Length: 387
Image 1 (spheres, helix red, strand yellow):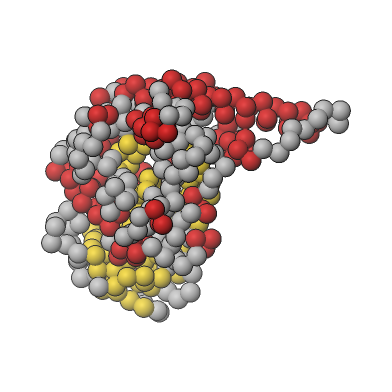
Image 2: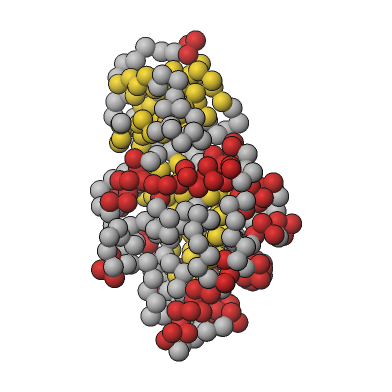
């Protein structure tokens, strides 16, 4: 892998510093060095003159269904919800993602270099989430972390799916009970496995793929991503996580800005908010939410929930949040280092730092100016888009 030098750029590192007129060098897929133009090295490989443009880390969306709901297809390309069983923790988004979907290319050209791809919210337990790059042809080569989280869902989505089938769950009580039942079974399964490991006379449980999938969640190795909009659903998610010692992440959290005092140590992936209020639990939908969450000391990321709102328009959601009161730096962190931290992939992506994956996006100017365009995108040290 060759070297690529970007020079004469305003570098927004997202680790607390901005280099007003600087350079950044990638080598062997990683960021190798960066600094002020006063000490810019000679280019040994390809060189990009940013001409005063802005360089940010590659953008990240911590909640999407890209590749699971394919562009321009109906049921043929709908692989996000296995709505035949309300508890499907054994399912892996990895096995449903089509990286050849046109939406990946469009997202990449908009500067989005990493995503979390999640099963849908039809089931109380939907399956395993993958963190992956957006550049590539084979999902196996694009993995950042797998599994990255487990998907749970509360509120109207599972209720409506199974109400139409006249099957459980049709109430919030049943949705929570199904989640608890599976977690309790997984706890018992883990206890029996651990006992059999140290006691030759103890019988190990028969292999159970569902329960095996829940063990990393119970051990705290991956977080529990809870789809929840209403305040009471958010509280149910936190109640279940407290009962079982899970690490919660609230997905959407549409009313979360109204209860920030209860979310001090709970990450929220806020959005989508550039959509209509399509159901009753979205009545508090507002573009002010991510700014209010951030001001309430909540670790906040911004999502467009692709394909609800196309991933290629992620920066439009960031701009809308800023128009509604969010600080520019906070808004950019909400699509770079914050989602990386929430996903546990911040050692590799989310900021411009030596040793991290060479993922970045070059804008012609201030990205909050609608006239600014993406000039180049690097992913793993390769130029994957150039205007």
